[in-house]
Image (cartoon, rainbow, N blue to C red; front, top):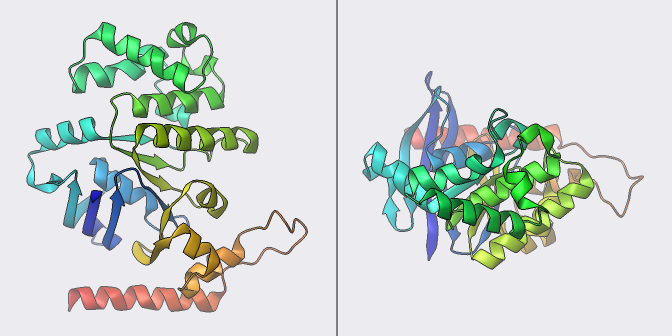
Length: 288
């Protein structure tokens, strides 16, 4: 059974330019689904639409978002925020900008528990300390009193992971959570997210442009181009035998660690032209 089900999701700018084109996807309980594609494909926009944090210039104009069997669009704005706050969480891309530089770490973890879920402050602080230990942060009492700038990038990202898991959500959306980290720390953070996801049985929607990351963390995969779903398959099938020409081109363009001196292969213009025509035709069908 799907914990998250997105059906024909359409998001447009205020001038009518589409950002998501009737996107449908499912994430089962405990599943890791990766969203991949070039910059501007609509990966992060899906996560923002689910969490109700679309930018002001964008508007959800069609489709359904079913979270734990409940249609979020049928709820009042207040009820929707409460449901999302209790059942879903976000691991954002850049920990330095995601954390408030003028506040200590402790309240930034506990506020969500206290203000949205009604926890007592003391219980929330105990939970925060427990989570900091779970994400392998030493001296958690000291870190709770620290400011973000006093910590390394890897520690800040671990804190965001701890914060995301704080209320035991059944869905976490990770929006390129390793992009701002160096390769060594990236590997540690990926393993931590995977370990936490498995331990807590959380559904994970993982946004990335890095197919190498997908191979390490994903179970299923959705390929996007121009806000349209191009291919949906298992990660194993994608790497063994992708079906869509654009998917094949993306895979071919990925650098091979086994061939460090090999040439980088851009996605051919012919493939881009064909997939753009496919998107245009899809729009025409939708408006017909």
